[in-house]
Image 1 (cartoon, rainbow, N blue to C red):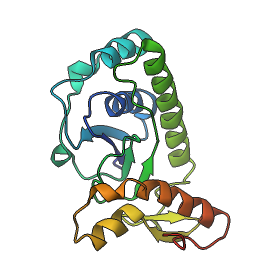
Image 2: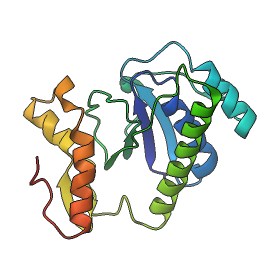
Image 3: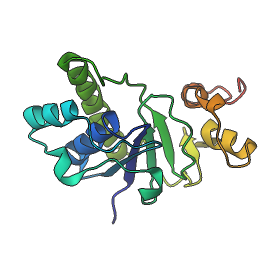
Image 4: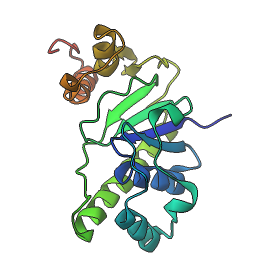
Length: 196
């Protein structure tokens, strides 16, 4: 059986999303296939991210990874944005999440190390949720809907894109946060999407 594919997406695909791809491959590669992309990819991976991933984990990101566009991605099951207000990638998937991570680019090593640690924790938790069957159950469909507590909810990202005729706009930045609110409401038995 093939592993679910997770894509980590940010604007430049040069730092956080590259770190997430590498850590997912290293720490959850037995249950997930990882990749990453950006809406405006840079020419190379952030050198500080490369250096710190090499010293902390022995991972040589530049050997197997490079910045790429959304068009270069294969079909994905899980789409994770890094929290950079990336314009809505209207990629079909079974689960969308936004991890809300600060961009360490241009900061000192402590900022990078903090982001690396947050990504590590998130990747491990994602792998645990998948192994326990808490995500990607058969009730989840690959069209931007997400099943929470056995109920299916249209991701506001997909909902917004549908209202825009399949196009996204800069007005979209709060939609993924809105989806997390919907998830919490459903988990507590409330009605979702009543605040959109």
